[in-house]
Amino acid sequence: MSKLTMKITDVKTYYLRSNVVRDRADSGQDALIVVVETDAGISGLGEVDSAPLAVKGAIEGPYSHAVTAGLRSLVIGEDPFETEKIWHKMYRENIYSGRRGIAIHAMGGIDLALWDIKGKALGMPVWKLLGGGFHSKIRAYASTLFGDTPADTRERGERFVSQGFSAVKFGWGPLGQDEKLDLDLVRSAREGVGDGADLMIDAGLCYDTKTAIHRAKQFEQFRPYWFEEPLLPDNYDGYRRLCESTPLRIAAGEEESSRLSFLDLMDRGKIDIVQVDLTRCGGFTEAMKIASLAEDRALPVVNHGFTTYINIAASLHFLASISNSFILEYVVEQDTILRDEITNQDIRMIDGFVAVPDGPGLGVTLRTDALERFGIKL
Image 1 (cartoon, rainbow, N blue to C red):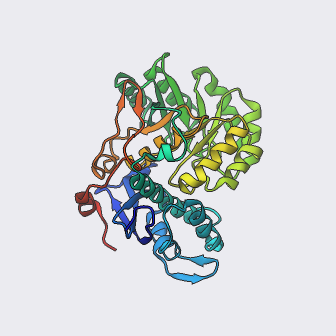
Image 2: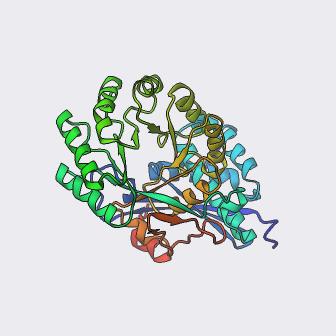
Image 3: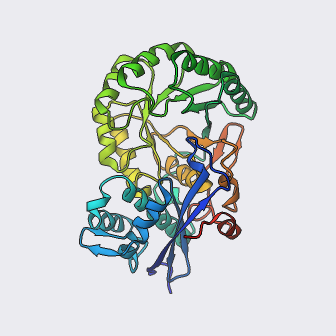
């Protein structure tokens, strides 16, 4: 069987879950891994950061009718090199449930795996297949949650800067509970990272429009590089009002799936920084189109990724393939043990930068013992 004439024979999903899952905004506590197999013996690896069992159902569900079908049933027998055609087929033949959200997330997991297959078959990294080469390494920012207290937040900032990060992002609760606490948390974050590092603030969707406008003015004194997702994702007019009211850069996009959603965010919402999660937006095939739309609007693109090294690897390939990228989200939450346990490769920050993988495909492979240790039998 030629590597260039192969067919997809199966799509498998694996639900992995940490032994302890805390009630917090940490999507790295479980994972939905996607493996696409071919008759040439080459398999591809993908991941979906979403509701794992809902995605599993979207992939493994049976064929129903012409516009609603399990994605696995649609891709078996297809040529994995035909990624554009397969994406279109999955979208069109699942359009009742696949225009936004879960089904697009699921499509992304399959799409990542297909590009991994293509890279392995050709002996090339995905970024080269995508026509990239803009970066051999990318500056990384440490992505963490706010501490439970201002003191804890300050300590986190000091720790990550001491490790070599030149930028740190703090996010989600307890931000949004109280005005004084909000200011104390952001002040402590700035004190922790110091004047020489960039500070990003992720509000975690916690404000209404007027409060977000007020907080943006209050946060200006702490010089955040960007103010992320202060509003609910469908509040595009609120984002426009916020962006027009503040000199702070407003970042958003991790909640969006498909380029049509991103168009609303960019054109109606008028955001300044476009955040793309490869495991939610439909994979490389859709992400490259989103990046082109952002470039047409002179907007920079960054990744979102708070899960495993599969997502981080995919993000590195993506960012290396577009001209309007400049920084990588690199999760540093210590509770996210799956990140360090499920792949044979670690992707490490060195002197503030992370190297773009140059091995075939994504450049990461699964540890078989991880499927046994963390896999949930259903």
